[in-house]
Image (cartoon, rainbow, N blue to C red; front, side):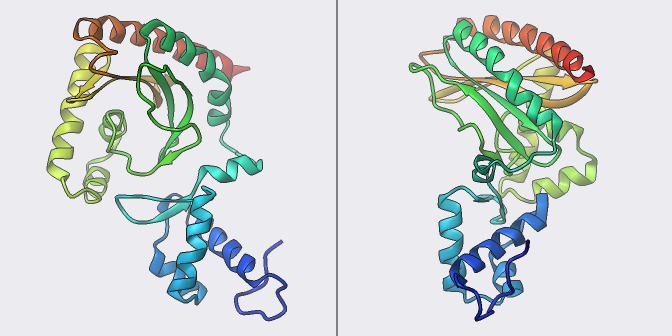
Length: 256
């Protein structure tokens, strides 16, 4: 049941009313997200009040802000309330990732994460963390800055030419981002995985599929010490083989 309209003096909890209406407004925007000014305008809120309500909703992770676009989206906190999820693939991955991530983490000695691409955002579904490795993202996080990660190369490759240009407009380093996505995908076609080292961290990313359609990645993250240079290829091939079996199992399970 909808809450009463803004400004209705009969509300017994006007601040709660406004917070719920902000949440409903963001949810209605869906994957497109909504900006602060639009929330203020459409709900006739003072900016200072809107900022306070959004701050609280964000602290409870009911809302998340895309750091690239500045737009607000619903956050992982809603899932903790038992919100019904109508995405069967996400529900199956929540069940299936655990065993796979544990196996890969133990084999490589590094933190392993499972991500799902729903066609618009990245879902961090599950993680097996190793103490000597890195933290990586938190399960339940939804990320909208989709090209800021090595696994962004897989979705970028599948975008139409127009979608690629639209997505790149969200980044100040658009040309560097384009080159990175293209070079990363070329590496994948040659090796079966993407290896992303920098001065501190190293990441190895492998995709998995359902009916030949890309649906997510398994990513291993470590440090310059926890992933030795002479182990990268060995770990990469192991994850590639495991991801292929994971894809096969996913296709079998979805038939049931």
